[in-house]
Image 1 (cartoon, rainbow, N blue to C red):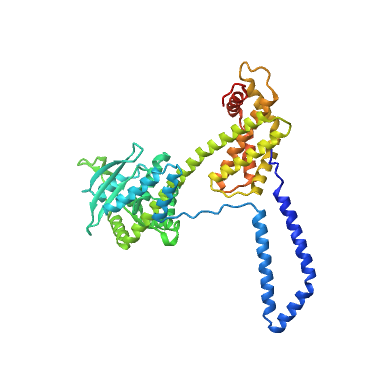
Image 2: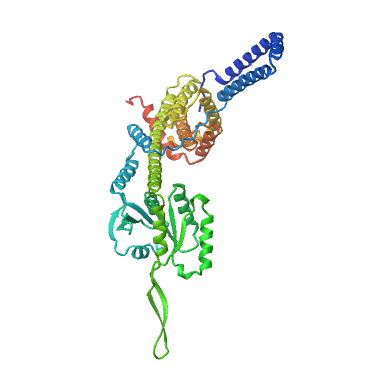
Length: 493
C-alpha cells in the first residue's frame, strides 16, 4: 500500500518549531539585560514579585510543552461515561435511530419500564440455575398466587409471573425467569429479567459455583438489591450455615452485601419406616417447607426505602437499554464499515488498472488510503489529524511490503482460476494485490477503531499482519472477479 505523497507535516512542524525556539532563544539573549533589570526592580518593590515572575514563566513553559505534546502525540479517544438519566438515553435513542441504527431493543426496554411503572407493582425476580428448586420455592412462598405465562420476546422460552399481595397490601409480582445453564441465550434472558426487577432472590444450594458467582457479579455491577436464599438449609448444621453466610458476605463490598437466609423449599426427603414385624422400609415423603426467613428478608428489603428500590430498578434498566443501544450501534458500524471497505477496495482496484505511468499508482493508492482512514474514523466518531493518517499509512505500508510477494502470488493464482483468461498480465495481478491489501487494511483499521476507540498505528499494523497471514484465497477470488469486470473494454461499470 502506497503512503501519501503529500509533503510530510511532522518534519515541517519540527523544523518550524526548531526555528521558533532558536528565535525565542536569541530574543531572550538580547533581552537578558532587560530581564535582569526587571527582576531586580521587582525584588526591590516586593519580595513576592520575583516569585510571580517565576510563576508566569513556568506557566508559559507548561502551556508550550502541553501544546507540543498535544500536536505530536496521537489522539486518545476519551472514555465516554454512560449517561443513565432517562432524557439523555431517549435523546441518544432518537439520534441513533436518525442515523439508521436499529434501536428496537433499547426502545422495548424503555416501553417495558414504563408499563411496569404504570402497573404500580413491585417486581421480584427469582433467579438461579436450572433445577435449583425455584418451582418448589414459589409453591412454598405464594401457594395462593395465580400464574401467568409470558413468552419472552423473540424466543420460545417462557417466563412465569405470579401475582399476590402482602400483608401490608403491597402488590407484588414474582417473576420466575428461565434458569440459567450452559445455554448462553437462556442465561442472558434470565439475567436481563433479573435486572428489570426491583429485587432479586438468588437461589442456591450452599457453596456457590464459579458460574453462579459470575452471574451474581453481573447483577452487582447493575446495583441490584439481592436476597441470597440457601436452599436445603436443613441439611446443614447451624455453624455450617453461618460459615456459608460469612463466605458469601465476604465476596461483596461492605456497602452492598445481600441478606443471606437459609430456607427449605419442600420437595421430598427419604425416611425409614419400621413395620409391625420390625422390618425397615425406605420411603420418600414431602419435606415440610421452611421459608419464613425468606419472607422476612423480602419484607425488610421492601420496607427499607421503596423510593430507592424504584430508583435502582430504573437505573439498572437504563444501563440495560444503553447496552442494547451500544450493541445496535456496533452492528450498524460493522455493516457500514463493510460498505466503506468494499467501496475503497473497489477504488483501489480501479486505480491500479488506470495507472498510466510508473509510480502513479502509488499516488492514487495513497489518496484512496487517506479517504479510507477518514471515512472509518468518521464512522467510529474518532478525531483524526493529518499526522495520524500519515503514521497509519506509513506503518501499514511497511507491513504490506513484507508480505508483497505472498499477496502477488495469491492474486496471480486467483486470476489463473478463471478459464479462458489466457496469460495473466502484470497490471491485473497488481490490481488484485492492491485490492487484497486494501481489504485487509480496512478490516484491520475498523477492528482497531472499534476495540480501542482511537487511531493506533501499531494496532492497525499488527491486525494487518495477522490478516495477511490468514487464508486470502476467498477474498482474492472475489477481488479478481471485480478486476476482470473492470478490465473489460466493454465494461459499463
